[in-house]
Image 1: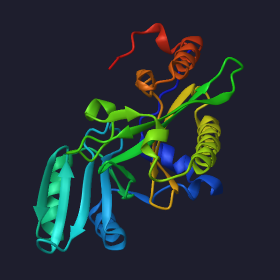
Image 2 (image 1 turned 180 degrees about the vertical axis):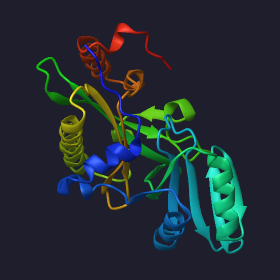
Image 3 (image 1 turned 90 degrees about the vertical axis):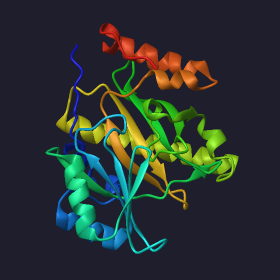
Image 4 (image 1 turned 90 degrees about the horizontal axis):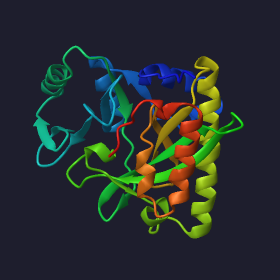
Length: 257
């Protein structure tokens, strides 16, 4: 059984943008250009510049306007933060860093924090044994203190969402939020399946802003299964693994953390 992979973030975003329901959860995103970078920084103050076909947070750059210690732009790739005194200087630096790869510019979401570290959410959606989409796992990803991305392979810490949200939501609010995530993720899967009928699994990356509004950062078509081993409830990983085996993901050796 073949499993479809879609690497282009831009292609997936354009499909989701056709849905009125999904559009309200998607940060404004444009193809990288001098004009799009300038207009989005002017409007939002902070953006993420990311490769169209990147994985595991590789190549992602956070850019924001600054007032202190001086007017200009601060940008960070991996753990290295740099400063540009002017937009033209910033643009030339980014062009040099991205080389000939195609990039996107996405409105930056100020993520919620846990113990002064940013975090986001990975929702695992899989075809179950009845060949229907099912949310099989929800896990938080706590960023490395010195990095801008939350990915496990970039030093992030997988953690139960209840722990990360303890200071942000009551038990009842978190239960409602989880239900919202499930509905959102299943809708994403159903929309993408129209264009890509052989999809069997998705890893939906969700940011949460300070008003507890979820934002779709990106959707992965070959998500890490083993991150769910980090949850105290091992039945979550067992289900993720069982479904993956049923639709053929495990025939080839998968990378484990």
